[in-house]
Length: 208
Ligand SMILES: Cc1cc2nc3c(=O)[nH]c(=O)nc-3n(C[C@H](O)[C@H](O)[C@H](O)COP(=O)(O)O)c2cc1C
Image (cartoon, rainbow, N blue to C red; front, side, top):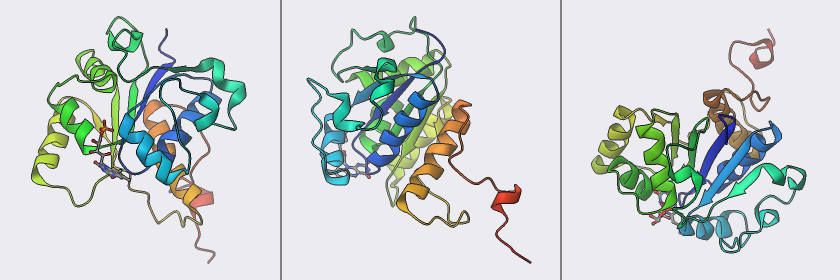
């Protein structure tokens, strides 16, 4: 338990590759990652990643076939396990990311309804005034969703919609995933080389 411990929750919004890549990048950067996955996220992952992920028992290899050497720093918690350390403010962390974050989870967190460990850990991060980053994906956004997002922003959360940029001239889905994951890492102050930064020589595509 330390400030280098980060919490990542993957929920049932489209965009599961963002969450999986984020966990990999954080592990490779030397962070300890506390991972929680919602049941709806497994449905989305089956479709988007083509992989069936069991939550109990959870097999890290099923989600991260290439990250085995870092598994000692991956701490998985079942979404119903309110006994997990991350359910308490006394467990120190360096922040939490919900990526991707469904509108259902946005609603639960913004109303303080701690029905599962993801909602509870997010609640804890807000009350302890720690960094909470949510990565919502929905379009268009209805008024209730916008109000819920506003409430979260007012409570101190960072709202980072999964909106990859095009000015970086992405060549692949990986490029687009890396852009979002890189911006999340910027927020967490985790060093990375995932994106080309505007205003740097590498980002200048004008050859004239
Ligand atoms: C294939 C698929 C894609 C989905 N995409 C989204 C989405 O982009 N945004 C969203 O808010 N919900 C989406 N949903 C609906 C959520 O999964 C659903 O509201 C669920 O109850 C969210 O639960 P959770 O927040 O506990 O993960 C999707 C569902 C499926 C099956």
